[in-house]
Image (tube, rainbow, N blue to C red):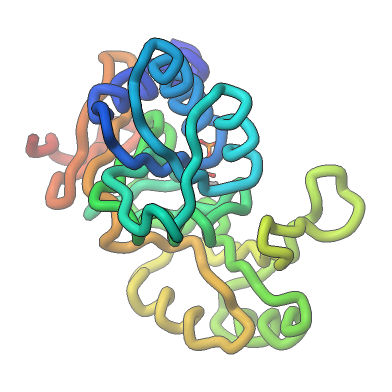
Length: 242
Ligand code: 5RP
């Protein structure tokens, strides 16, 4: 199965969790995007939902597909958000922010009754940290936050813009430091330490937020919930609980 096929498969499975009248959070990234397309098709076929997107890019796509968008003014509680992840560890601890949208993604997840992660097997890990941990930072504070993250041994690197000219600027006008920290032994502690730095807007550790991960692999889609034992990419580890 190609990665594109896996992403489509998991998007279709995620659609099984969507029903008429729901208020839906739309994720950002190459795994969340096929879900938005599937949702667009369902809306065309008569499904009535309202959505809030986690990025300008996903909002633009939703508009093009005719998905009705709402705001937190009118809709402060969402039923479900479907979003991707860069890494998924036991307890559904996540690293997110590979597409620089983790601030809005965390806001939308915090407003959602259910957070469904969509991914393929390559995202499942035993410990977080191989994927650089994104930290969104106020531009004014960048030199200070860089020093503080360095002091914590997190090896921050300023993310360049996709075109390479200048830094990556988020939808909120901030910059991103990607922390090449290696395996994160205690994610709660690391999250707290980063949060305590003045000038940090949000980091990409999503702890205790996701309820369900839909993981596409060769044998179809498996469901991971909090408390499951995750199986690593190499098939190591004990079998999961359902
Ligand atoms: C965006 C995210 C994405 O969900 C994450 O980067 C995964 O992206 P993809 O599905 O393209 O691998 O957190 O900020």
